[in-house]
Image 1 (cartoon, rainbow over the protein chains, first blue to last red):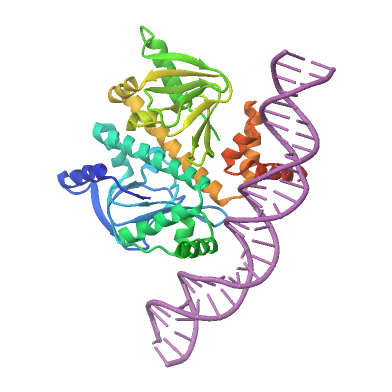
Image 2 (cartoon, rainbow over the protein chains, first blue to last red; image 1 turned 90 degrees about the horizontal axis):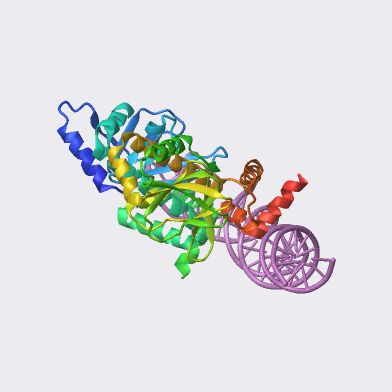
Length: 189
Length: 189
DNA sequence: AATGATCCGGGACAATTGTCCTTTTTATGA
DNA sequence: TCATAAAAAGGACAATTGTCCCGGATCATT
């Protein structure tokens, strides 16, 4: 639900402190509501979140959003786009204050060429992402709301973040009206 | 919808013919209905389909299936499981006669260590898979059946494969009853 | 404190989808 | 080719979900 990756964070952290002129990797901060990535826009940056939480969503042509996942410490963004050299699959927006390591796509790709460790970490990251996306898709398709909803509520507690009803509904793939009904049910039980 | 990957197929094909004693990579054939992978079972093989089509699905605890995708020429299976050293995420079953290159997980992993090309190809494969799974999940969540259904019908035409109603429904994430209704609608329009 | 803007909750109804079950069609083997 | 099984189609009803809408709460700004 909230994705994190300590290996990657540690790796990038090391990279950041070891560089001599602080040019390749910089640390940038975003406020709540800022966008780190814009869907369909060609990007040139790859980032790794060092702090905070962002949401990652697709806006379909019918204007509905589908909220994939919440990204926390150590999650990488823009790597797919860099690998495939294409526009952003989704929009990534900070839902709390966020700090992120930022590097250019070309630096990222050169890292992959030169650094076997980076390569391995990335393979693991992508594998995790597939596992995650796949099991979520199937889960969501085959189960009732209740479980997902209560997990979502827990997440907000634990991470001290507040999601709007719209975001919650987009994550669960339902309308706000249905979400309200589900919330009412939960309270009663 | 039907996934294929010519780069990977070519790469594995070369590997297969170049090996001296035909031990590391072998070619195996499966009949329609045979399972190449079983969900939750620990596996030790990674395979690449050279011919035919297989379906890839998860059976949830409530006994419903969720059909992820159809795998064709050049699609790799078992790679996530090998990378993460875990049981199979899903079951893969041949829906036509299938031939596949088979290698042990350890050989696969050693390939990754030694061969940069393999590494790059795999990164691309995983990136593709994420793009695919993600856009499908959002699409399915946000659109009506019709589009997905007509695509599914096209696929069957083009690939000359026949899916059972159960499979079609599992792919679309609906019940057979709803599928029948949707089919009727399509005919009328 | 008054004014909007925005978000949240929920009523009423329509539309969609699921469940259960029966009928019809198709495939298959003795 | 007939019998039987398996797959597909669809009727009837229930349950769920969506759409549209309005009233109330909250918050920021003047």
